[in-house]
Image (cartoon, rainbow over all chains, first blue to last red; front, side):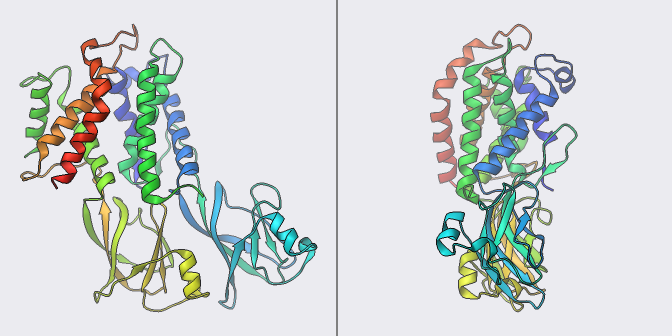
Length: 211
Length: 199
């Protein structure tokens, strides 16, 4: 993977006035773990507000008679979905709200047939439901937005171009400068947050907004 | 212009020519690297070409091409253009497209690095893409207006340094530099405009 999160920390300590990375590690008003927390917040915000972390998922096996399925881990929104049948046939699934399902078919929860629609709000969160209730085995394939695993001390890498390490660096600086302490600097915190917003705007124009 | 010359110019403008102390050379280089990364992201000017051996319909490109930013052109080995499309357009074109096999002539790019091709075909494609530099070095010689970039880095970097406060006593390390904050954004924008237009 591309972006090494630990590289952001190496760009942070001297901008906060520490004389070395060890100096930062021995500090009390700000810990390295907190910096990683600020990075984690920024990455999750990026995943929610922009269409960066898109992935293709075909791990959900559809079985006859079962309309409800758990969504992939860290799922945010489904961009497009379709069913892959064993014989090679493909069926596009139209994303449909529960209100539209009731308008379409008053008995939609029990209607049987080959699914043509997918609803994300008809059941619990983190689940999806197929309409009609499927009659045969298939694979639910989807292109979906996700958010990455937690960024924490010792964590590895993000599926992002390294050019965005500066955005995360500024997010850590904004978090550090806005933390209540003797070293708090509201003006600079706003300044760094504006830098993060600038990067988010570039990312959004380049890779799209979130859902 | 070499990296060393650029660092020397920055030090000179920071009134630390010869023996930089308050603004170490390593931090100047970090600022130059950051400015070039942002420049690549803003302008997509760093065009590169790679051969992509396609296999499945969907591929994440970053593990294959670590500096991939965005696709610019995709062609087959024979030079035929593979045209961009949206998923909805592919379904309108062919309702069975995810399972189609044959010579590729459409692709869809989504998110930071997800690319799908239609139809699927085990052939190498030529990918021209906008890239970035992970730890960049500047060209050894160039006719570009690098002095504007140096000026930008100076202002940018002075701004960052002006915020440096002693983490123990909370005093500004250089109060005289805080007046750069109000004009920083305007100057940075102007300088970047100059650089981008001159290239």
